[in-house]
Image (cartoon, rainbow, N blue to C red):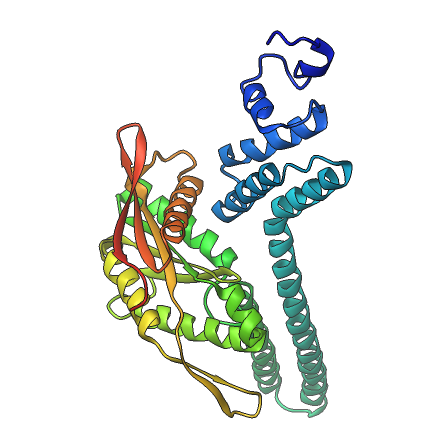
Length: 359
């Protein structure tokens, strides 16, 4: 650039930076902070650890900021806060879910402790009674052994129940993210050692936030439970538990892991779930059970990827990113679609398998 007044025109953000000309055309002031912030907004699209939804929100924020062309100090602070909130949203969501899960575990553990206390007190009473009974020593040993077996049985049941709670979503009864991570690792190991098929299907209920805003979270929870039931019924129609793992990530996000031969049926399963939900008529009732709305429809967007498209190194994260990208593509195309991610040469492609607007 060769401006008449260099002190006014030179881009102080970084001379020769590839965004300088663009910033000049859009009227962005020669302010290091503004240009740094806008460049950060643009660069967010490059990072795989942000979700597609976060990237879209950041892109929308960037477009809105440039369209408003308000580069005041107050607006800078506002944009910065919005940007930080978007980046922190997924962490805050996971933290909230983890805290709730921890609270549920603590309640169950407390109940187990009281139960164990009663069992141990019973053990003491029976042991003392057996010794004082004056019975044959062998009979006393049998009584004590029986009492200890009762306690061991109670503790074993508690351990199994706690393991189940740790891996189960309280609202829907599906596996949670912890169980998903374990199942994915098992699937990757089977893929690595036995070349067993592995496919990841991500599902996201469309416009659930708007649904909750309109009908309330109590009704929204009922919708999540209904969808979970549909997903379970469809996924396990032809496959056992060892072939399919249905999970709730949190919020309106769900995942299905398909192992071995079940991975070949991902299209049929995704299409069946999409069709079932699309044609399901929700009935909205008040807290007294009275019907206040009929024929409420919901849809779901789906994206899936296969293990065979990726190298073994970091395959779990790559499959998640790929399925998430396919899901985002389904959302971006209008929702209510099933989209496949596949490798093509040095890049990738998205294929719309089925779906579209609700008739």
